[in-house]
Length: 261
Image (cartoon, rainbow, N blue to C red):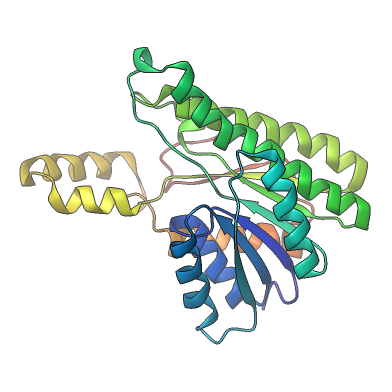
């Protein structure tokens, strides 16, 4: 087991990539506290993960990462339950598909509050624990493939994720120098439940054209990736001691659709 006795906090752990991350962390022996804003989904994920009979364990707690007071209270409770902290996997995020001319102060604030400020608040809270306990911890932030490639009809979402990349690379230097804390970014292109539902219900001619386009865009599989198979393993690596000398890097989990230069 690569993460035996590791103490890990996961944000956005109630569905999708976050839930897949929690599941694999527990399989690898970690003690995990994960958060989200949907209690029913959180408790269902907790029950499903703990019923696997794996060496690790997961506990759900409610937290809106856009609220700094909630984040700090959540970290206090989570760290007390875990008995410390080794890793933060900050997966939580929101998306808005709008024409660039249609963004308003309200929907821009919504995106930035969760994607950027939520990253800042959770990272700060984790670093305070690492520094106080002398832990050479790992911070793993989620950006997106579009942070590098751009996103028509999603410019502000792409901007918020681009900001996450810049923030992560900056703290990688600052906190690495101060405390040997490493900070890295995962930029995924992963199929979501919403996307799968769209694919099941869309007009067959549109679906055919869409899938043919994906084959040209994604060299591996000709399709966006799977959260559990393709994304969770990199999260295990970045949480493990095998990545202790990797810092300030962008890991593009996208089948080769965007090359980092």
